[in-house]
Length: 460
Image (cartoon, rainbow, N blue to C red; front, side, top):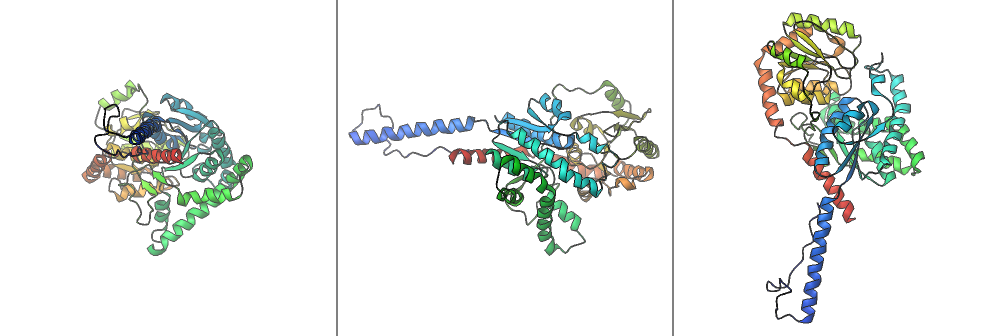
């Protein structure tokens, strides 16, 4: 926050104007004027400190795209700011349960993720997303912003959109990414492009991808807001010039040597547990009835046929001789038996520490939750950034080599499970990383950036 203006007092004896001191009329008048300035400056500073910044966090996508911003939003609200999430209607109740504001975005991500082509969209569907779905999301973010906003906190995909909207409604924009765009692109180029050329190609790939995928949405917003064409270039430039806070640990993604000071790796924004939440008694009884089970869950990933995948998992668990808690997810996996319990949504911060290992799709949030719990993982990536997170888990020695979904078999899964459960190195490494994560405060840098932005706005 902006510090109060300093006021010089002429002499140490002239502190109290009520005290009779040998002051001339001009000296006394000057001193009283300076005291008035000091009192006014302190009042302004106190008003600024108490001012609530209206924060809007657009969170289109699945639950994994919403949950971290709930944790960040709660922290910002505790600091006195007004926080609203813009998300799809299916998540509205969960957002309001955490006493945050909510404005709805169009579409339902479950319709896409559970379609036959959702997990591996062809180029035709990607074109449809670019030309139709993203523009609808862009208009939804604009509508949400018209409810009143000072600062938009934006993820990776929506950053140019939010930069454009912020200019149109007179707000500010701050990147709050859940994915390491530049690191992930570099990961894809490893072994293909020499290191000295990678950074240039990363920047070119980022700019080209943003331009191709976001341009139709910005054209829609340009028409709605009546902004000049130059605004589109400014919005795309935001990817390179605006501050970005990344919501994951620097242990997980070490900052690139070429990163600018505006690219900040802050630490995870942990999703809060719902107030008053209690575990189902069936789950408690199952955990108490034997040794530590493993967790298997793929969240919103629709990984083919639910019955076929359930059968594969049953075979893998029998071969590995392990108990399991299985999350049904959006695909609707269901397994039954003395050594298996199928559950719906259970907070990861409660469940994962009670597991021997976690099998998951390597989404950003689930990957972080496993690290926080100090348990090893078996990553089964499906698409997009999940392959990057899976590779990082293996590089950090908390997981064996990833098993891509298309290569998943009962034998491979069983072998990987036995490796992480029987190998003490995986567990030791996971616990060591968990102790480091416990000392991080990922929300603090975002708060500092937000207050700095508000201070600059107030002084402008």
